[in-house]
Length: 119
Image (spheres, rainbow, N blue to C red):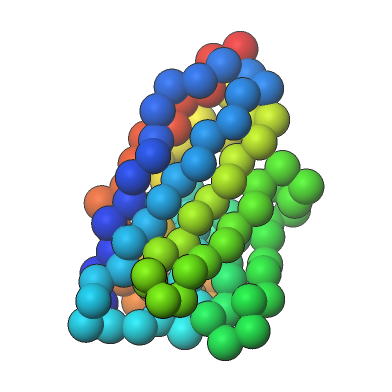
């Protein structure tokens, strides 16, 4: 099983941007990497995923047009660029490996990084 490490969270104001980064462990290569989030009082939810093979991307409806996921296969990293952040984006964001972009199942996740958006 692989492992990932997230970085880049923080506190921002509404309308600001943040970039989250995910580094995958060197001994494992996920076919699909993705991001999930858990908002206060809610279950973990899918945010975005990207295919290692062809770079195809998948987004939750609530982040389409504001968030962009990308990856560097050589470096085994996945990045989530978040623009026009809103208070409802406040959550712990988790990078995950072996994500199924249709069922939103995943094999493993990191410890998470906090994103706080104030109005």
